[in-house]
Length: 118
Image (cartoon, rainbow, N blue to C red; front, side):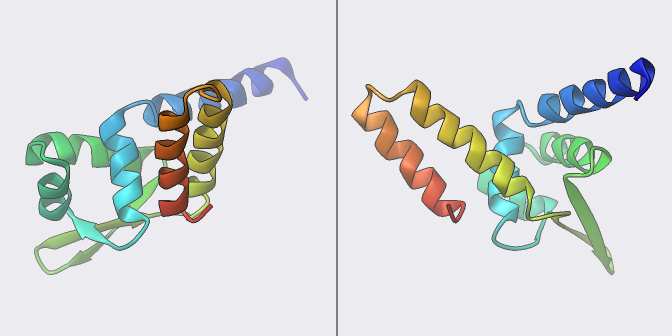
């Protein structure tokens, strides 16, 4: 494979992880795992402003993590693929390795993995 194509793929993977690097976006992914939600439901659940929630959703949508469904004046967001939860599970499992000597942290991570269906 040509070097420029490899570089483009690597850059794309890096951008994908940049999108997942914000705690609010990780929480949005967690919330959307269970059901579709509109921006108002998400911002209330997250405790952040509606405009900030919209910015996160725009970035997640642009990067293929979420998609939207319009119903009248409402826009409902959902995960484009449930496979994103596998990425989150892998990240949490890696955290188990890093925090192996911290029983309290292990318990919290295990709880999060359970909510993701691991």
